[in-house]
Length: 319
Image 1: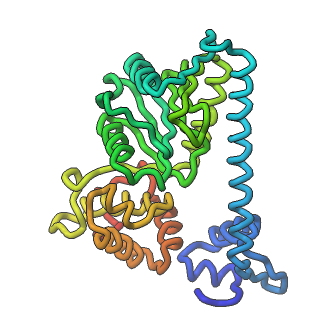
Image 2: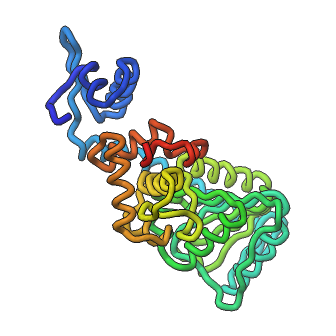
C-alpha cells in the first residue's frame, strides 16, 4: 500500500489483519520509531524515514553487542588476575597452535550431556586432526554467523552436527567464538580476532554460568534452520507432492529471514540460485507480498518459520 498515511482499518485491510492486530502492529512500529501517529478525528499513521529509524534500531543492537564484548573482556581480566603463568584450577591457557584442536577434541569426546557452540570466522583448522563428533545421546546446539557459513570447513562442520541430531540456528552477528561442554568447561579464544593466537579453557563455575547465559541470549535471538542437502529434500523443480516443496521453501525462507543472501542459501542447500529465487517468488505470490521483508514478516506470522510448522501441512506452495 503505497500511500503517505493510513488509518488502522486501511492498514488492516491492506495487510489482511484484524483491526486488533493492525492496532497492535502500528503501536509496535510507533514504539520502534518506524512509524509516527497523526492525531485527529480518526488517527492515522505515517511511515518514518527508514534510514534514521532503522539506523536507531541497529545502534541499539550494536550497543547491546558492545556490552556483551565488555563482559568477555572482564572475563579475560578476571582470568589474568587469578591465573598463574600457565595453568590454574579455574583457567587453562592454550598458547601452542596444536594444543587448541587437541584439547577441543578431548573435551568434546568427554562430554556426556550437552555441547553449546557459537561459531564465527576466522576459523582455525588443523590438517592433522580428523573430524570428531559428539557421543550418542549428547545434545548439541550451534549458532553460526550467516556471513561465515559459506566456506567448506564451517559448512561441513554444521552439516555433520545436524546430521547427528544437533540443532542449528543462524544470526547476523556473534560476539565471540565459544564452545561449552556439559556446562562445566568453556573454550574461547584469547583474542577475538586472532583465534590461532591461543585459547582459554574456563572451568570456573561462575564464569561458565555467565558464558552459558551469553550463549542462551544469542540462541534466543537466532533463526532456526535445517541444513538439508539436495539428496535429503526435494527441489521445487521436482515433480513431487506439495508437502516436500513446502519443507524446502520453509528452510529457504528461514535462511532469508536470518539475513542470508540467495547465493549463500543455494550453496548451503546445494541447489541453484534460480531455484532459491523461485521458492521465494512463489511464497510471495501465495502471501500477496512483493518485497523480501514483507515475505519474511507474513511467513513468520503464518507460522511457516517455526519449528512446529510441518512441511506436510500444505499451504506454502501447494495451497
